Structure formats: C-alpha cells, structure tokens
Amino acid sequence: MKKNSIKVICTLVTLIFFVIPTSAMIQQKKQMPVQMPLLDDFDPLVDNITVTVTVKEIRALKTIDLLSDPDFYVKVKINDAEFISDVWENMKYVEDPDFSVSSQVPKNDEFVNVSIELWDKNNNIDLLCDISADDGNFTQVRTADIVYSIAAGVWWGDDSLGDPSGLGRLNGCDDNSIYQQDRDCELWFDITQNDFDQDGFPYWLETEVYNTSPLVSNLGEDADDDGIPIEWEHFFGLTYYEWGHDEGYYMVYDPFGWENFTDIDEDVDALNNIEEYKTWQWGSDPYRQDIFLEIDQMQKEPGNNDTTVPVLSYEFLRDSHAKHNIFWHIDDGRLGGGEVVPYKAELQEYDLDQFYWKYFMHQNSNNWRRGVFHWGFIGYNVTQTVGFTFGSRIGGLFAVDCFYLPALFLKTQVKIIPLFSSLVRKTFNSEKQLAYIYAGVIMHETGHSLGINCPGVDCHDGKWPWEINYWRYGSYKSVMNYRYVYSALVDYSDGSRGKNDWDDWASIDLTNINPRPHW
Image (cartoon, rainbow, N blue to C red; front, side, top):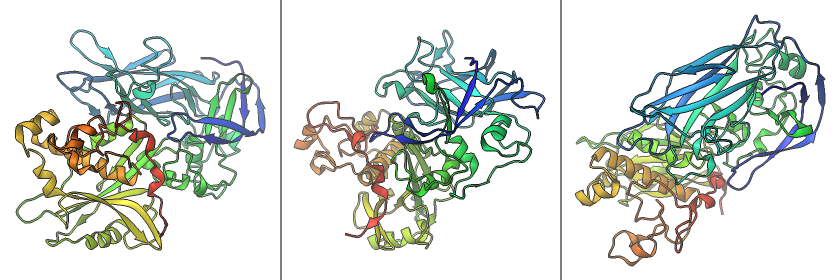
C-alpha cells in the first residue's frame, strides 16, 4: 500500500471502550499539524533501512488436527520478499519460536507491506490457520495484512493500536468464531527497524515530531515526568488512521506532555497506566484486558504429597480467556513472585491472612502488586475440604482478591469414579485430569472475585444426577456451576443455551479486585 504524501498530526485523544471492550475508537481532541514534503531518504544516518518481523509465540486455541497436535509453520512477507519458517512438529503451544526475518526496504517509501500466515503442515494439503479478523477474501480472512511506517515505527491494518486482541497479538477468534471449529490460533509478533542510536525511534520521528537527537538513545527517558518512559508512550501512544481527509498519524499519549496515568484505565481491567507499564514486560496492554495471578504453594508434606499446580492447567486457563481477548498472566515464580510457604500441619484460616501479608505483600502495605495481582494459595485442608474465595484487609482497605485450594482434596477428584471421571474429562491420563481440575477450580474461585453471581453459581445440590438442580441448571455450562467445575470444560458460560443459562463473560468485572474502604 503506497501513499503519495504524509501528514503528521500530534493529537491528544480519548479512547472510548465498551463494558467488555471489543473495539477501541479514538476521537480527536486537539490538532497540531506538522506538514512535511516527500522525502528521498527517511533516514540519512544509515546506509540501508532493514525491517524485521519477529514471531514471539504461537498458540492453538482450537483443535487443529484431530489425531495429534498441529505441525505449525509461518510464512512472512515483507513487501515482495517471502520467508518460510521451519516446521514446529506436534506442538499446540510454540512458546519460543526463534523465528525472525529481515528485509531491506526502499529509503524513500514511507510504507512497507507485511503479511503473516500461520500454516499446519499435513501429508496431503497444508491448512491455513486463522489468526485474523474476518475481512477480505478467503485467504485474507485468515491472514494478517499489516502496513508498517519506516517514518514513525508504527503499524496498522489487521493488527493496530487499540484493537480487541492487543497490539502485536493476532487472534483468530476476533471474527466471532469463539465456539466454532475454525482453526483459530493466536500469534504474538513484533515489527522493528534499524536506526543509528538503536533506541527504536526512527530518524524522521525524532527530528520532525519528538525533537530528540537521532544520535543518542532516548530509552528510559521520562521528559514529562509522568512516571512512564518514552518507549511505552511511543509504542502505545502513536498510531496511523486511514480516515479520508482525517488520514494521518495520531498521538494517543504525548511523551512530552504530562498525563495523570494513575487515573487512566482504558480497558477497565483495574490496572491504571502506571501499572500497565510495570507489567508491560509480561505482556500487558492498556487497551486489552489482563488478569494477573500469583500462586504461592505450601512445601511438600512429609509422605510425598505435592501441592504443585500442573503447568497444563495454566495453558487451559490462558486458552479459555484468550478467545475473549482477556489475557491471563500466572506467576508461580516465573514473573518474580510466587513463594514457597513452609509446611504447617495444622493450618487454620487465620494463617492465610498471615501468609498473604508475608509472602504476597512482603510486609509492605504499599506493595504495588495489590490491586494488580489476584493471590491464590495451594496448601492442605483447612477447616473446609473444598476451596474458597476470601478477601484481604490491609491499611483500612478491603479487596476480594484471594482464594485457597486444598491439594489433597483436588487429587481425590481425579478418579473418584474412575471410568466416569475419565469419560467426563475425555482422557484416561490422570495428570491431564488433574490439570483440568486445577484449571476449573482456579477459574471458579477467580470468577467469584470477578463478581460472577447468578442462579446456578455454587449450587451445592447440583453435583449429581439424582439432585434436582443437576438438571435445572444443566444448560448453565460454566465452571461456576458445581456440575462442571471438575470437568474438562474450563470455561464460563455465554448465556446462549436458553432457560437457566447466564452470560458469565458479559458480567465479569475486573475492577472488583480494587481495594475499597471497609464497610
């Protein structure tokens, strides 16, 4: 896609989101136009401009192959240059693809065309997987077509600032195929270019818009002293819109104008922009909802009982929420949190408050992770044999942000009725069954802290076929329903199944984690 001219508009805008944001609209507040003629060289400090596309992660959100995990490979085009990756065989989740391609582009052409395709290798016909919204012909509805600017270092098209899946993330479910077998996947990527000072800000952007030096790296600078450095405000604050006479670049956030980021939560996920910046290293996006969870676990009990949550449980949780563009980040030690709590034989409920203060808050009432991370503790039976949600009280503020899970009880659910349990969870593999159980219970308890509360939730007399509410709430297929919490469902209901079904996804309130004054 070529353009004949370039118009730069430095604008402060407001992002308007719906209750559960499925799109973001940017409305213009103030214009400060900067006109610029056509250039023969967008970066005179480098001999050649090279654009690089890096694939960071690939995940199948649906069944791709019936009898095995998919054999993924990626095709990337940068203008007319095509690159094809090796095949990642039998992998549903490719967490470190190690696939990055680069191509030299003209220095006088502002726009670069980039396309990304995800394929499943087969013996007969390779299948194109879906990583895009439904737009264009049959191929385009699955392929990501993107335009990258070498002038500003931003991109738009099938992935753009403020889209439902987040910048740098493609989601095949964005065409409303959440409950259809449409080979939906998600793919994380980045697009970059070389520049003299290696700070990621192209020459033209530095000299004509930011008025920074293209000879010196500006990474880490916070010129407006608002608590967020220039690289975050650039990545999430500059975009391009093809809106007729309004076509041009727009600033959502100005790196050189102070903004009260503690009071901005564009995606209504309880994280203000300061917290979005602090969690950026783990993939948070200020325009796409994120849930953070810290899991602390009690040390192994004498006799080899183990409280470790299967890693596969986390994958199930990520998949179920990713289809709805809510991204889960689980920290069991991998994100800098996650504690191992010393074993205690006689565990009481009041111990959990102490554990929260010591191992989650680290005895700091101003710990920024409170209100950002939910806290889950995995231990041995307290006064109850099942898990439960509870709140924390620190510094006069109350938050519904905690849950407890009893490892021994959950293990007994693996094969409580062996054949029936295996059929319900669609696997005879006991480790996979345990992963389903942990995932379902974590999602259930977190659902309480997200405000899901409708008939059918925690219905104790709906567990078995001989109980009346087993049939009454059968249409309510949600982990919040005890009938399904230990199954292979790992999902909330969408309210589409008629009588006695409710839309959990629409009622989620991520801000419920915010600490509030005691009542």
